[in-house]
Length: 466
Image (cartoon, rainbow, N blue to C red; front, side, top):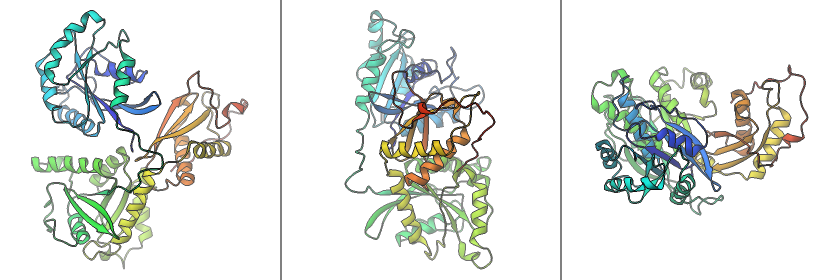
């Protein structure tokens, strides 16, 4: 189970970013006394009473952005809402109930996850009576808080944790869940033909006319007695080519399908060069931390003229951030190599759901740190004291250190590649968080405090990468 997301929404300028920073205990989101400052989603991993969750800040709902980014902001908000385990609906006690608050309330009316209405800027108990108007929003009990006066922070955190979905046991469920596979790619690469061959039934409209599939469609099928769900998606083309609204919404449905999926099959046409659309899709898959298989379709047209090694090098050079991802060469019309592809997808599904014990992880960390210590930062050696896996799908690891900023990106990639190799996450993305060890925390599973000061500033540099 992935780390649950707690999403903060509301109209502009009610203090969403202040609530985000206040709950996170660190200033991350920009706080200004004007609407529209927060545009993209901002997230931060935090914990309360041992339960980890991601806080997600969003732009104000209903804002007219001065830089014509309104659609982008709305997309980011909807993406956050779609992924939420709990939603914090922030209103402003001093301003009172506004028409746009009611609009936000209507937008949240059909969501299925818990929604807490947070009356921000309620600086003392005397102001609680001013929050009663917000009961008209139909969100039940109003939680009066004040970020400036640090009022009811623990109360709110307790309420959030109570509403999070239950944690899965480390050993996983007794029965494997049904795997959902999203089939994505640009137009006319053979996605629907693949699904038809897979299900052995004409469930999709298959045509040589690009863009026939205009919505994401779930098709259930079985392989070796196991049920799967294939999510066929519309073909995507470059944004500037999305002249009709149907193309615009098709792209959004494809993105939503990626978020829903357990494994993504990114289809590529063996006879075509990798395009900007392919790279944008791959980037989005990476942002969502989804296991991916690069599927080179129509391979029968090139099998006698191009070695597979050349295409593998081409893919690795084009998608450097996902060099760990496996590559499959198939012929969708005949079904050649399709069973092996789906078996491999099942392997990735299992990898992403694995959990390792804290002891295993820290023994591996200790060996990795001793083999290649982190490079010096401002004349000092950074220390990593211990790590823990806090969730799966994707495997999410938190490392506690003396200074997160001192652990360089190349060294983080080195640690991730080591985790892949030794913890059997070879072909799936891993989410890594660095957190400062609290002063009251004396835990040191890697023996970092036992290592003396390093005086030679010219030694090792982290050159490892995934």
